[in-house]
Image (cartoon, rainbow, N blue to C red):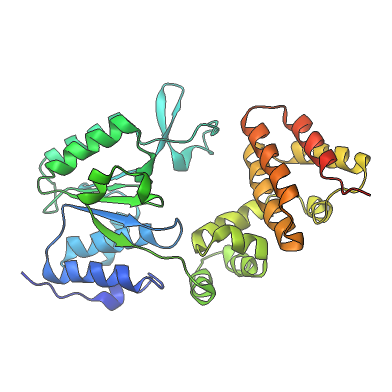
Length: 326
């Protein structure tokens, strides 16, 4: 059965991903869907948006329908299950997107847990409420431990009439047997022109600041061709007090300067912000000097912070060692 696909409206806001769009359009036009898909590529380049538009087409026969779009974007369709990695916190699972708001310690990475994958099996085993099939989306699929991955593999071996979509920025970390049971849809990094087009569409107060990020070489390097990552890094950059930036432009020149900077960094920034600052400073120093030595010392500082060394002490030692030799 062939469907009329209004691709201009359905995928018009997915920028610079022609291969992914052509494959998804072909599936919609033929009305033939693989039991499972693997949307692979960097974070922040449109994978989640592509999932939403593809599922919209699945529900509407390839057309753009605003009612279904709003329900999918709000994740409130009765036949959609959207999973993301979780933290174990106070006896319950907290989704990664809610971790910061709930004050979850994020030193341990979030995981897709066995009970979540078992929930997928139960969801796909029930009768859909409105759609022809149950739809499941799993973010960061590479975050599955072995037990969860094996449970998902069993579901993929007997998918029934469900539609399962895995999102992964590191598909090589998935079991090869999981990858082989999915149709892979590749997403690529964006070049500078495409990044500018995407950022120009940002809504609200971020419009001006998002384009500002294109003028910051450190943030562009950290983003690696991902508009979503650039926006995330820009938000992190804006949380660092302005006076610290002036002192970070160059390495401290005197011991007292190094000790004062260590104090002010640890008082102004939380642990995650300090780790982000190390990433930025490594990029900045590399652009300035292309010298691996200070980068390696900052990498050791990162290891110390992750290893629960007292932050101010770790920064003091690192900054003292980064003072240029006379």
